Amino acid sequence: MNDTNLTSQNIYLNSDNASVSYNSAHKVFYFEYGINPASNINVLMGLTNFEMVNSMYNIGSNNNNITIETATNTLSLDIDRGNYSTTSLLIELNQRLADNEVYLGGLITVDFNEDNYVFRFSGNIQFNIISSSMETELGLSNQLPSGYLQTYTATDVCYLGGDASVYIHLNNIGMYNINSQGQLSNVISKLNINVNFGNYVFYNSFGETNYFKINNNEINYLEVQLTDHYGNTLELNGSKWSMVLTIHYQYKRDEKEVFHLFNQPLDKKLKQEKK
Image 1 (cartoon, rainbow, N blue to C red):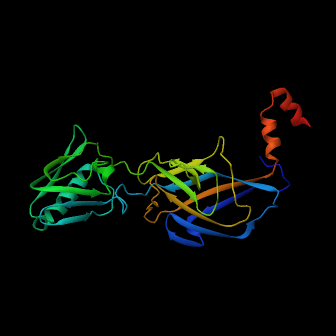
Image 2 (image 1 turned 90 degrees about the vertical axis):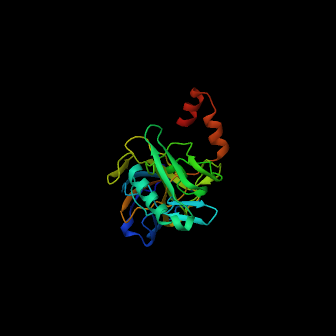
């Protein structure tokens, strides 16, 4: 991987040692000794180790709102952040809606169908569910506004499994990765969250590591941000994380020569490589 006289490097980052902390999942690390190879050398970077606690609530500040309109008023309801089951979410929603019965001009309740795994909203008045940042959790994706009615049943099943993955962004590093919108992305890795709440998420690249050629040839700091698949910064609730980024160096090659080499028959390619 490294064909220069420069030594490969590991960058060890611990979240509690960051130079700047925007929040628990968004940190900036400044280096006393920067990375600045000669202009004829490419920098290759890969994530080789990562660990964090799965401390994210399944209902956080990015997905805790529902807005309901009646003939009397419009209620924008934010429920408290936390780890909810269908039972505890029902209790919270019904309590908050009951507290606002007079304001809404009537009582709206929520129940849950255990067989179909869907939520249903009912009222002694007509109501319109205008929007909700809990669309996925409540099974309301691509259905809102619901229109005025007295009963509305979500067409999708609920999802309270929480974040399924963590995306590791290096905000000040230019890479050629592409996201689902077809745009260049500074995400160096997507890691699955395969443990329950409160347990550690571990990643170790015992097998093959993806190394990316980066645009920056001079790196004096790294801005690291952990997000969900919507691009929202993870709410780690004060927990810590650490990672290792490994850097290799390669001499720049003429693109035409590289293309020609990799498109030759195997016997010619081997002869050329020996030269």
